[in-house]
Length: 232
View (cartoon, rainbow, N blue to C red):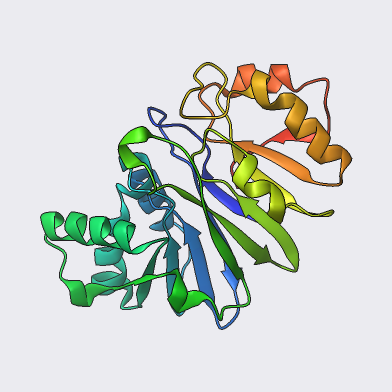
């Protein structure tokens, strides 16, 4: 897989969905930072990295609950810079509010929007999607290039449609998939035909944000080209 996962679970799981990859210039790019991700990052050897980018998909607690802690840890313990990348100005303002509530000083990290990383070789685009109605127009996925591979990471989404233009032959799709609960997530049984069609086009499909891993594995058992993401 192009990404290494720090968690694959949904909102009430013990480990929430988050991933990372290594980029040029000794940079680590992290996608979302729930508390479970912060706890894992503390136990990873980060000495080879000189800078951290954190891409935020949206501001639900299972996606940013550990962000303030990681910023503090990087500032006070690692003494290394963190650039928090928000997909829109509105999301950046919400993150700034969370930081203020938590008592984080603005100087402890750099909070930017995606325009500030557009020159990065790994960054392609942020993709507005539909998820929770309470966060309408504030939920995004990302189009990235990781180790030369075209990667689409949906974040939490109830539709695959906004991501289809980015899925060319040879792509990897990491997609939010629910077994039991649809509405604000893609439900596996409903989306399976779409996943299979993408696979026939040469797109590798990985399932994440799972509410029941065993049930998901059972559903896709007859389809070896669809894989359930396992932890790094």
